[in-house]
Amino acid sequence: MRDIMEDPELFKAGNAPERIRRPPREYKVVALRDCPVPETLMSCVTPIDASTYWRLCIATTPQFESERESFVTLLLTTRRRIKGHHVVATGVMDTVNVHAREVFRTAIVAAAHSVVLMHNHPGGDPSPSDADIRITRDLIRAGHLLRIEVLDHVIVGAAKHCSLRELGYFAV
Image (cartoon, rainbow, N blue to C red; front, top):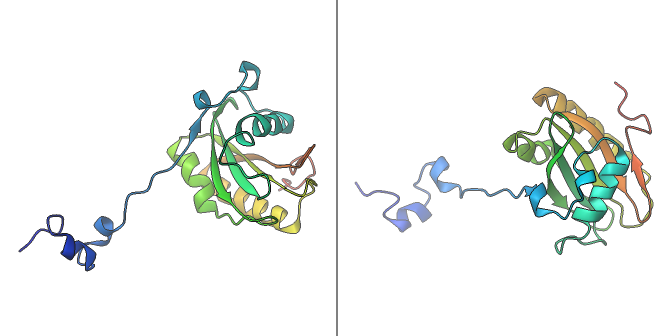
């Protein structure tokens, strides 16, 4: 009997078990040491802290496209110090699709205690849409199951930001 790993034709033909056929995945968590963050921004206690982090560390990267919505998860320790961030998805001009699986996968891998959800509105108005409110509530419920607290969902606009916690959408 030929070994599947030695014979690429067997591997391509689909004879390999499912766990071998799937290519390995790589996840990019941007560690804080890789970001130009001032020492005063090492913690994320308020939405202003999150918004400032966005403008300094996320919006300045070459991969960021200001004309498209991007959904980012800030990964925090138990003392709300930023461990890093993960760009979960980049969408189109007015929509970005995310799923709890992708949002919390990196938080689990990075052993984050809590997360702050963030995304931008390229139009400049940070007011939450019905879809923003709906996905926030879904992600809060998923976080409860995983015991990873969702501290806030901050929407970043052109000159200002909006916190869904401050607007009262986190009430249970």
